[in-house]
Length: 63
Image (cartoon, rainbow, N blue to C red; front, top):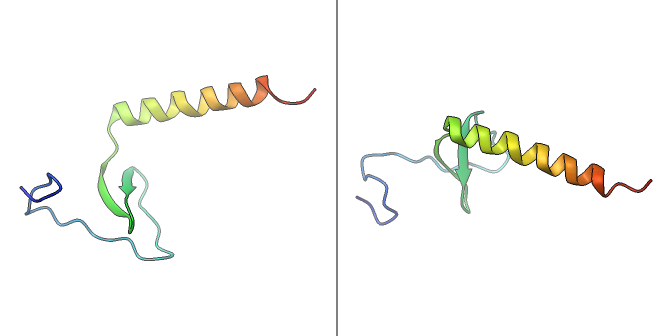
């Protein structure tokens, strides 16, 4: 294992300025690195999060 708990054999590319991150992956850090692919649980959590955020926006929208 490497210092960050990721296998030394796993190559993690750094993301250059202006680069696009492929859909379906998580990129994090400075500089950003692709960490892993999204799981079904990640996708479900993101779906709930945007719906909750949109509901709160509508709740607090000026009338």
